Length: 410
Image 1 (cartoon, rainbow, N blue to C red):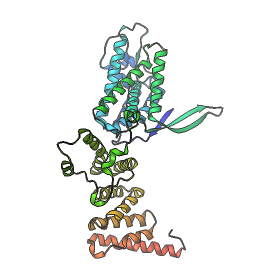
Image 2 (image 1 turned 180 degrees about the horizontal axis):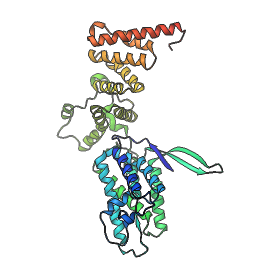
Image 3 (image 1 turned 180 degrees about the vertical axis):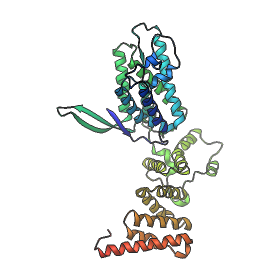
Image 4 (image 1 turned 90 degrees about the vertical axis):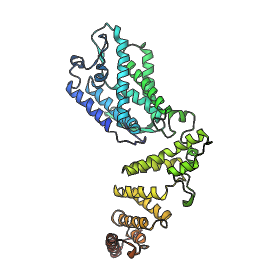
């Protein structure tokens, strides 16, 4: 099974995962794609020659053949981006190198008494298994799209389907554990894989329990206890009306908090605020697409959730600026439906943007005319008046062209 993609939420673009893939390919090229023994140049993890700490790092970038390299890089991309996507590049790099170094230190220590033919170990596989274990702890219910090739009389039969991270990664780790037992715990690549997976599991649990990573209540323990995705955790977001809408400003939190507040309730409330905090952080950094992803998760957990006026305006404006027209249209429309009477300046801007989107990118001049109709030209600035006049002219031209062609506006 070859992982193709995952639906796990990604909050950081996987720059470091890409860099690590490039580094692995670079070392492979330096060692002749496996046709030159890594041991000859002191890169692989040597057995029975004492402890060599530098090899605890270098050996993780050496691969013995092209298939060894390609397989590891596919899995590194598929699951490294999940871990880096939750942590950011520098914490992810620390985990990556630490799992590799500790696994190599353990393996080389076990091999101190090795007296067989000259040998050693190399490759990123142990780290990959560590990343698989972390993904099992942090995102077990997310799904992986996998490719399966089965040999037939006509080359291969191709199957593509989705499977949970828990099932996919758990199956790989379980198979290695079974093989390790069947081989009598002998010094082998299987042993390295199991050590890497164990280290990854420890890292995943420790970071989760210390709240160093936010899994939004979809972690392995929440799934096991059947408390994952509990909508009650998002009651603080429940939209009732604009006048009573939740606004998580610092003053609101200070006002609502009391010295006798239940610590457990406060922790639940803090955890419930996390997706909205991330959404606002993405908006502040100009990443409106990621903010939309956070909004989708909030609505999935609590269908009655609605953004406040300011957040909705910033999100709609950001998505519009990034030219994601299909996402911008419903956001701009929702703002007008809910908040048209609250801020005249913003409402005018939203109407102009929506009209431009409808006439230029959705081919709906009829709806664009409807969006422009409430606007009084005298309320607009000089630049807005110019844009308004141009939009009305384009709308009129398109409506006339449609009428002449006998087309239906739908």
